[in-house]
Amino acid sequence: MGFRVAVVGATGNVGREILTTLAEREFPADDVVALASSRSIGREVSFGEDDVLKVQGLDTFDFRGIDIVLSSPGAKVSEVFAPRAAKAGAVVIDNTSRFRMEPDVPLVVPEVNPQAIAQHSKRGIIANPNCSTIQMVVALKPLHDLARIKRVVVATYQSVSGAGRASMDELFNQTRAVYVNDPLKPEHFTKQIAFNVIPHCDIFMDDGATKEEWKMAAETRKILDPDIAVTATCVRVPVFIGHGEAVNVEFERPLSEERARAALREAPGVTVVDHRANEGYVTPAEAAGEDPVYVSRIRRDPTVPHGLNMWVVADNLRKGAALNAVQIAEILVKEHLGGRRSARSNVEPLRRIQA
Image (cartoon, rainbow, N blue to C red; front, top):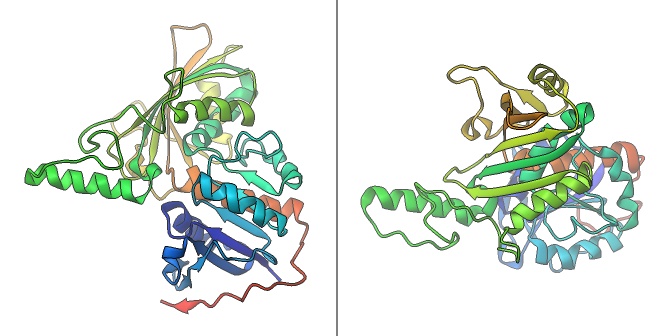
C-alpha cells in the first residue's frame, strides 16, 4: 500500500509542477489530494498525462491520515496550516520561506545535506530552500568538498515565474503592449519588466539588501557551511522560466579549473556544458523543463589567490522548487518512514477523472 500525499497550493506554478513531478517519478502514492484556497474548490488540475484531480479547500481539510504534505501556498498560509498538518501526523515539506531559518526545522537540498532530513521528527516540517539558493549550493557542494569555500559573490538573473503566475502574465502583457504601442502599467513588479531588468527581488531590508539577497546568504550557510561568506545581488529579468547565476567563488586552497570541472561532472544533479565556443554554455531557455543544475563558463578568477567563476542555470519551478521537494519526499519514504502507512484515514480516496 502506498502513501497518502496532499499537495497544497495545487493551482499555482509550483503546485502544478509538483503534481507533474510526482507523476513523472512514479512516487509511491495511493492517494493524491489537491488542495488550494476556497476560491479554487472544484477546479481541476492535471496529474500525469491521463488524470485530473478535483481541488479541495485547504481551510476545512482534515489532514488525519495524510502521510506527506508538499506545500507551496505562501508563507502566511503555511504558518497557519503546516503546524496543523504536522500535528495531525503528516510530514510537511514546505516550499515557502516561513520555516527555513527555524533552528529546529531542517533546510534540505538532497544533493547537499540529505542527512538533515532525519531532523523532521522535531516538528514534522522540512523546509525547501529558496530557488536561487538551491541551484547555487548544488553547484558549490562538490567544490567545497575539494577546497573549502571562503566567500561567494553571486549575481542572479531570475525569471518572472519565481514571482508567480500573475507576474508571468505581466511580462506577456507588457511585451505585447510594447509592440502595439499601448501604455505599460507595472502591477506586480515595481517597474516595467518587459525589455528591462529590475534589481529588486522581495522587500528591502534595513542594510539595503533585499530579502532575496539575504535568503541566499543565510540559507547557504545553514545548508552548506556556517563559515561561508555570501554576498548577492538579485535581479529580475524578462524570462518566463529559468534562473541564471554568475557565481564567483574564493577558496581556502588552490583548485584548478580542470579539477573543478571534473568534480562537477561527477556530482549528483549537475550537468556540465562548458565549451569555449559559440553555444558552448546553457541558457535559461534551454534549462526550462529540465531537471539538472547546469554549470558552464568555469574559469579562473585572477584577482584573488584561489578563485573561480562559473555560470549556473536551472529551471526554478523544477529543481528550484517542485523537484527538490519531491526528492526530499523520496528520501523521507525510503530512509525515514520505513514503510509507515496510515492505519486509518478519513480522507476520501481520490477520484481520478479521465481527461
